[in-house]
Every structure is written in structure tokens, then in C-alpha cells.
Length: 146
Image 1: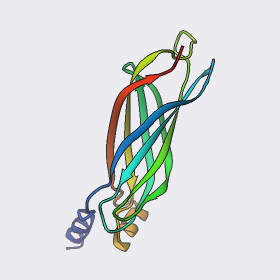
Image 2 (image 1 turned 90 degrees about the horizontal axis):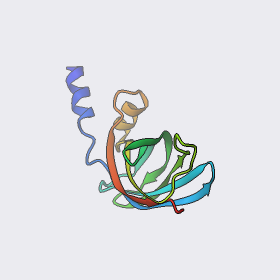
Image 3 (image 1 turned 120 degrees about the vertical axis):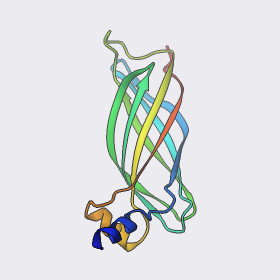
Image 4 (image 1 turned 90 degrees about the vertical axis):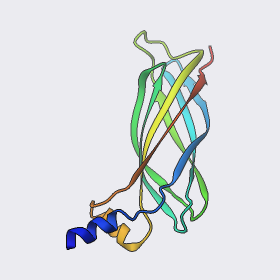
């Protein structure tokens, strides 16, 4: 009976937040590499705030993994609202020792761990029983200049 109650409670997380990359650009550049900053907009359609706990993300450039990281979310999506946050990426020089240049295709993939609303969901999250996640992916072209 207790197992059925926990299963029922962990299955009631509501609608997960959604995420969209609204901007991506080179924010720093040097001979050693470049910093790309992705501005992500999270949308929460529930009637409760949704704290973002961690974001695990990776960036592929021209089909090759260029960066992987996990960082604290440090943001809460407001009830029925949107909130932007930034994901910085450091792109190191390639095997030839040169920093990337020109137009490059990219794919950003992320898994966002968030806290579902309610005191029971919070207790389940804190105890490690249920930590809901959602994912997003964005692709496009970045201009690394010459």
C-alpha cells in the first residue's frame, strides 16, 4: 500500500516547464578559444513557481563535442510565467591548436532538473526519491569571426 502511495505521488508532477534558446552569441574571444553564451527562456504554465535545481548541458560544433557541464540552476520560473537565464560555454582550440573561426553549426542539448510544486514533491525531491527532469535541444549556426 505504501509503495502505491509513493508511486501515485511521484507520478503527479504536473506539466513540466519548457525551454527555448532565445539568443546565442560569442561573448568573449582570444587565441585560446571563445566563450559562447546561450540565453535560455524557461516557461512555467503551472500555478506554482518551479525552482530550477541543475542544468546539465553539452555543445556540439560541427558534429563534435566541444563542451559539457553541469551547473546550478540559480533561477526559479514564476507561476504562469517566464524567466531567462544564461548558459556559458567555453570553446577551446581544436586539435590543430587554433580557435574556431567562421560559421559553425552547433547543437546545444540540455537536461533541466526542477522541483515540482507542493510540500510533498519538495520532500520527495530533498530525499532523492523523485527529481523530475525535462530536456531541450537547439541547433543553428554560430559566427566565430575570422
